[in-house]
Image (cartoon, rainbow, N blue to C red):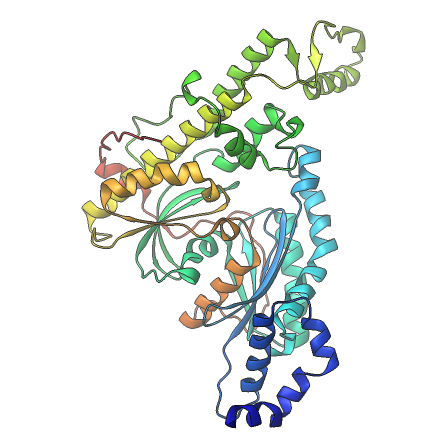
Amino acid sequence: MFWLQFFFRNAAMQKILSTNIVSRCTSKSAKHGWSVCLRSIFFNSVKYCPPKLVLGIETSCDDTGAAVVDDNGNILGEALHSQNEIHLKTGGIIPPVAQQLHRENIERIVKETLCVSGISLDELSAVATTVKPGLALSLGVGLEYSLKLVDKYKKPFIPIHHMEAHALTIRLINEVDFPFLVLLISGGHCILAVAQGVSDFLLLGQSVDVAPGDMLDKVARRLSLTKHPECCSMSGGKAIEHLAQRGNRQHYELRAPMRHHPNCNFSFSGFLCNATRIIKQKEKEEGIFQSKRYINCACFAVLFGKMHLLTISTGLQEGHLMSCVTDIAAAVQHAVALHIAERTHRAILFCIKTGILSQTNASLVVSGGVASNQYIRRVLQTVTNATNFNLLCPPPKLCTDNGVMIAWNGIERMRAGLGVLHSTDGIRYEPKAPLGIDISKQVREVAIKVPRLEVMI
C-alpha cells in the first residue's frame, strides 16, 4: 500500500502517466515503459543519485548509429541506419555517398534514440563520438553534429577511438577484467593487442595491407554474389559465410601467407589475388564474363579514342553465376580463418611467455564486424581450447558498427577520468590513428614457433 500511495502521489509519476508520455511509449514493451516510469520517479527523489547517461554517436564508415547507455551498462535506447543496400548497388563504399547519407540520417537517428530512451538532451552527462580512425568524410559528419550538440546544451564531449570502442564492448555484457588479449577484425582493420586498461593498449600486430572484411567483400563482388538469389541483400562477407556452409573447401587451396614470419602481423591481399586467379580460370571454363570489366574497358577505349578495338565474344554469357561459387567461398573463408588463427595463436603464446598475461583465467576477446562470422569463431575456439584461454565475443549485433559501443566507451572513459573534455577547441577527426603502444618488434624478436593445430570443423 505504501508503494501504491508513493507512486500516485509522486508528481513525476503524474507526468509520466500524462497523455504525451504515454503516447510516446505505446510502441515499446511494457517492461521498458515501466523502467522509464520508475527511472523518472527516482530521478525526482531527493535522496536518489541518478546514473550517468552518455549519448554515443557513430559515423566512422557507412553506418549511422546512436545510443544512450547509463553507467550501470543499461542500453536505454538505440537506433541505426545502415547504408549497405546503397553500397551494394555501387559496388563498394563511395566516401562522398556515405557522407551524404550520414548527413541525411544523423539527426533522425539521434532523435529516435532519445525518444526510445525517454531521455532529453538536458539529462545527458556527456556526448561521446567516434573521431578516429575511419573515412574522413564520414567522421566529419558525426563530429560536426556532436560539437553543435555539446555547444548548445553545454555538455562534456568524449572523443572516441573506434577500435578502442570495439575492444571494450565485451565489458558491457561480460565481467572481463584487464588485462586481456583482443583481436579486432573488420572491414577496415585487423589488430592483435593487449588491453591493459580503458585507454592502455599494447599493439602486437596488425594487417600490413588490406583488412579481412575488405578482402571478403571484394571476393564476393568478383563472384557477383549480389546476383545470387540468396545473397542479393547481404554484405560481401555475409554472403561468403552463407554460401560457404554448403561448399567444399577442399576443392581449392589458398595457402596462408607469412608462414615464415615469426610475428603477429597479417596479410590478406594474397588471398584476393589467388581467389581472383581461380575465378578467372573457372569463368573461362564455363564461358562466363563479368560485365563490369567490359564496361571499364569501354571507358578506357573511349578515353583513348580506340573504341573500334573493343570486341566482345558472342560465345560468352553475361550475368550468370559460376557453378562453383559455394566451393570458392568455402575455400576462401577457411584460408582466412586459418591465417587469423595462426597469428592469434602466436600472440597468445607470446603473452604467456613474456608474462603479459597469466594463463590462469586469461581471455581472448574477438570483436569487429568480421567477428560475427561463426566459422572464424569456431576456428579460433580451437586455438583457445589448446591454450586454456576463454574465448569471448560480443553478440553479432554489437560486433558491427553501432552507437552502443561508442556510448559504452564514453562511460568507461568517464569512470576512469580519461578524455572527458569541457572545451572542444582544436578537436579534429583523424582518418588514421594507431591503437596503443606498438611492441610488434618485440614479438618478432622472441620468434615463437606456433605448433600445428588440427582444425576439425
